[in-house]
Image (tube, rainbow, N blue to C red; front, side, top):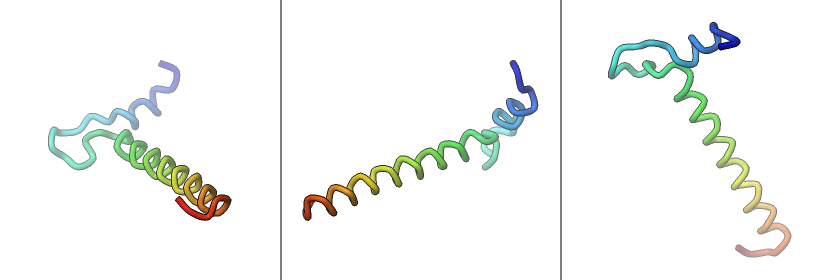
Length: 54
């Protein structure tokens, strides 16, 4: 493991059932979801702008 402090934050040890028991992984999942949503929205927007309809 190259960066133990990063891995410690990514996989924080928490109590089962706590909101932040998963470390940064849930936060990263949300950020990736937002990026995918933004990309899909941009592709749809460009398609509508070039073609005129969906």
